Amino acid sequence: MASRDTKKIGKNETKGSYLTKDNWEVMKPFVHFAAKAMMVIGSAVFAIVKFIPKALEHKEEDKKNGKVIKI
Image 1: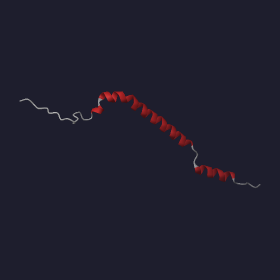
Image 2 (image 1 turned 120 degrees about the vertical axis):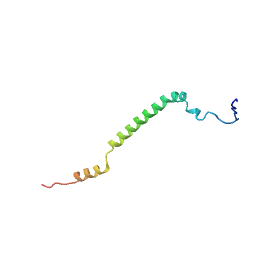
Image 3 (image 1 turned 90 degrees about the vertical axis):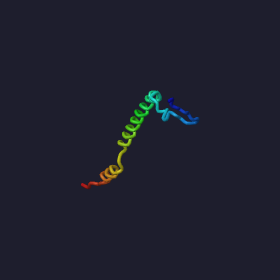
Image 4 (image 1 turned 135 degrees about the vertical axis):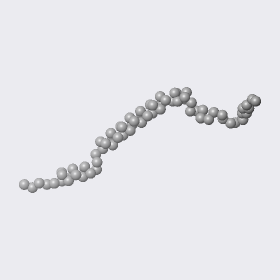
């Protein structure tokens, strides 16, 4: 007996067709570039924040400069 393959109009038979290997091969360089760019930007922001002086260090420096030594 022959099998029936009834196709219904408006039904998408291929679920996830946008996730094919061809699409991934096209998008892979862009994804790789985006990941590298985010790493560079993140490390730059981390370095900038690391070099910002802390507020507590300024207060300690002011106390040292404000002292008067009498001889």
